[in-house]
Amino acid sequence: MLVVDIQKQLSHFELNVNFSVANEIVVLFGPSGSGKTTILNCIAGISKPTSGSIQLHDTILFQHKKVFVPIQKRNIGYVFQDYALFPHMTVWKNIAYGMKNESFAKELMKELRIDHLRDSYPSEISGGEKQRVAIARAIATEPDALLLDEPFSALDEQTRLKGHEELLRIHKHWRIPIILVTHHNEEAKKLGDRILYLHEGKIHNDKMKADLSLTYSSSTN
Image (cartoon, rainbow, N blue to C red):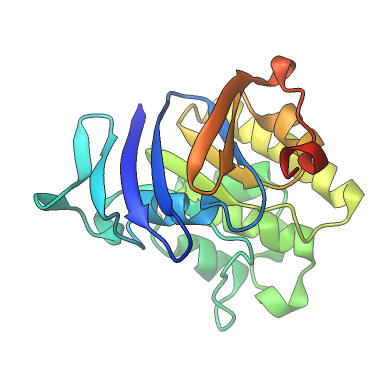
C-alpha cells in the first residue's frame, strides 16, 4: 500500500493531495500543469514536498522535518515521459542498470519481446521499443511501486494499444501499486482501476473507471 498525503507550494497554486494506492493501477488525470508529474516526483524522491508524509508499505519515505529517504533507497520504479534511457548504453546495459537478478531481467526482456534488441542502442530502436525497454529497466529493479509519466504519449495508435496490453499483463503478474499519468481519456478508463481527477493541485473526484463520465474537454471548462 502506498499512502500519499502531501502539500507543496508551486508557482500558481499549492499542491494538496491525499490518496492511497493498493495493488492496483491508479490514474492521475487532468490538464497540463495541474501537478500530476510533481506528485510522481515527490513519491520518487526527485522533489521534496513542503509538508505531509509518504509511506510505502511499512516504510516512511517522507515525513515533514523528520524523514526524507533518498531516491536510490526508495525501491520505486519510474518510467519517464521521454523514457530517459542512457544513450551510450546498449539495451541490455540499460536494463541491467540497477537490476537485482540477472535471470529475472532476461526473462523480463523475453516477456516484453525485446531480447533481440540486447546489443542495440536507444538511437537504433523505435519509440515502442524504447518504451518497453524503459518499463523493463524499471521492473528489473524489482520495485515496490511503479510510476509512469505519460509513457504512451509519443506513440502511434497501434503501438499505444500494444503498450496498454503490455502494462496490463505486467500488472497481472507483478501486483504492485502503479500510478499512471495520462491526458488521454480513453486510456485512463481502459487502464485505471481508479481515476483521480487533478485540477490546480487538488483531487476533485475519485471514481471507479466504469463511473467516469468526464471527458478531457469538459473537465477543463
